[in-house]
Length: 138
Image 1 (cartoon, helix red, strand yellow):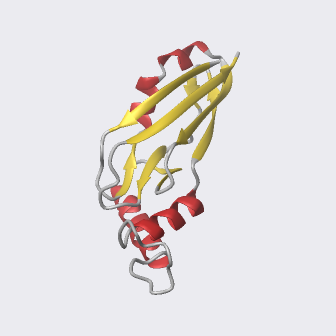
Image 2: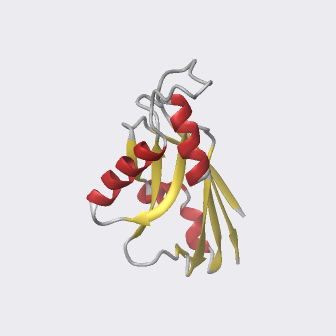
């Protein structure tokens, strides 16, 4: 089993491909013929998901969609001490999730064509984000 923490630089609000950073952070994954890789984000206002890695308009459309279903400045929100983007960020994070699980095949994450891991940054100024990457197998 291999595990590594990865601190990601601050990114703007939106959906950002981070697959290459994850692969670089855990080169030991290459020693596994078969296994699993879990990536977990240690925050409640950002999330992770797997989706299209080729066309950047998909990432823009994700941002548009999630802003529609969890809008800022909703008068029904009680939690607003950290700004108008905070409660919507928590909602978006819960909808998308805090981890992804990817099979390892011949030492590599077994993505389908056009798949990659997104950091979903839901805050205007979320700061650096920390991931824990764990890979296990044979």
